[in-house]
Length: 112
Length: 111
Image (cartoon, rainbow over all chains, first blue to last red):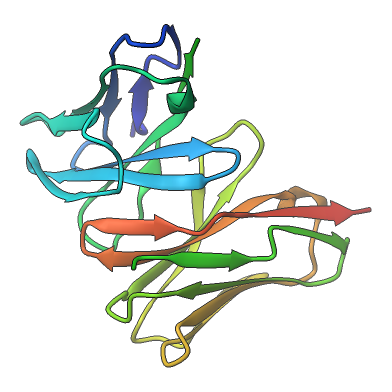
């Protein structure tokens, strides 16, 4: 079966712009989590969605937001981009709580 | 606060020797502890996980131990091979919908 798919794979944006990243989970998976990965900070939890509801949120500013659609696909949006937002953004899908999370390949965002 | 600490940040072992990575977590309610391996340029992949009702779990050369009282858990890799070289992340579930990762351990296997 198809794995977790993230689009686009690479993005270059200018400071102040906004960006939308997409994540298509494995079929049947209703939970989608988003992480920011940087060399110095590891994997930082952004938020988690289940059945179109945000169940949990990490310690990121309000510029970071997300949503989930009825087909479990999820998007995350970052507004007013800053240089420090440059990172690999990973999403992971799972069937539910405390089950294996499968990661996508990530979207590498560069803010210039 | 919610925190998972991981040590060491880098580890180099001779091929065939064992490697041990240790993590501590802060939330006593955590009940699910997965370990992920991330090879260079690739996505993280689950290698083993353990739940709080189990003290130890083994899968071939990989084993994980959990001490709930001390809030410690560890990954043990025996008979290391070159393909074990990667970054390893421990993680702990803070709630059913939030998994917090450690900062990662870069493991290098010396031939």
